[in-house]
Length: 223
Image 1 (tube, rainbow, N blue to C red):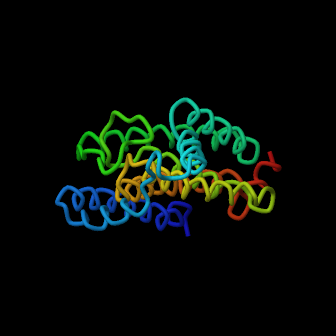
Image 2 (tube, rainbow, N blue to C red; image 1 turned 90 degrees about the vertical axis):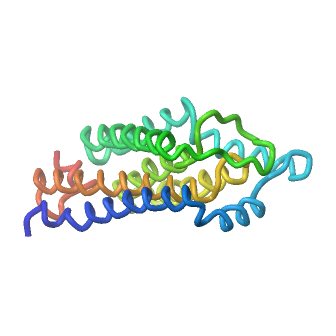
């Protein structure tokens, strides 16, 4: 089987995830899942003066990691880690995949132009539209690609932390009142689509260079 043929299932999965992101966007626009969004938001939203201050602060901290300059710092740190185990190409791929995912999320926001929820006062300043959640898309892209590429037997705790950050980042956006749950789901699918697609391409290139079954940490040590 050729290296391209081996990559096709992963590329197909990436395409499905991106297509589902669009389908969910149209479903949101049509109001088909408004009831689910409302029920989940009311259950999860934090309220200043009512919810525990420590919980609000912790949720804001998790959300803070996934936005602004600190987001790009995290991407840079993970890219350097991948550079160590996979080479410069993987580190560069992390940066480019994160960039393309961010552009796609911003484009989705502009296309669907979904208003932010106004159920409770927002606990995080926002200015853009809601769908998809940029924080969630970025977290899924960066941390999932890191999980897929980083050799688990070297630093298994890193993968666990990355998976937790994907979940907690998305959850924090709903808890802070700035996103509907479907915004987060759309962001996760969008980011996962980019991460899986990037992983398939990186795997194909590594197999071409080092041979099947000799990728990741072993490929790096062979250089």
